[in-house]
Image 1 (cartoon, rainbow, N blue to C red):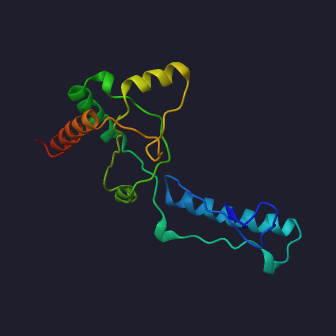
Image 2: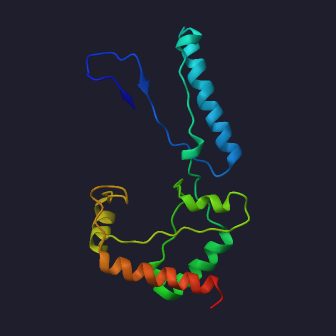
Image 3: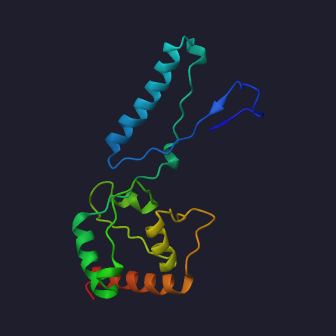
Amino acid sequence: IHGGTKHNIIPDQVELQLTVRSYRPEVRRYLLDSIRRTAEETARAAGFPDDLLPVVKQHDEEYTPSTYNDPELVERLTGLLSGVLGDAAVVRMQPVMGGEDFSRYALEGEIPINIFWLGAVDPEKVRAAKETGATLPSLHSSEFAPLPGPAIRTGVLAMTSAVLELMGK
């Protein structure tokens, strides 16, 4: 949210930017239409004239779809990685609405995709966070501090193994 230049001045304009993600294009369209409708109708209900209704802009060229992991591919790679890295190193995660550019390959359902996350944080910090209930810094945080050596070795091994499996080698 961006609006105004000082805390005690009511601005003429405020901008609100959102990230909207869904697993299916028709759901995304529904959500975007609902946002526009809700903004406009809420302003009308508050008595705003048409020339002062919110302006809702959508930037389709900046849209990154959510990643939907193909269930069969997930099972195949989970089994492979458990064998390569050990069962304790492969952790199933709950779905999240993270978006990646390569998600576009799966939109039509023709290309199965799977994103897997590489644990890169010091295992001692992970253990301490579990004990205390603390939240570890996320990938996009300025406080994210991976252990480069182990992360790179594990990542290269995992990706190489996955590629060899998928290429039938």
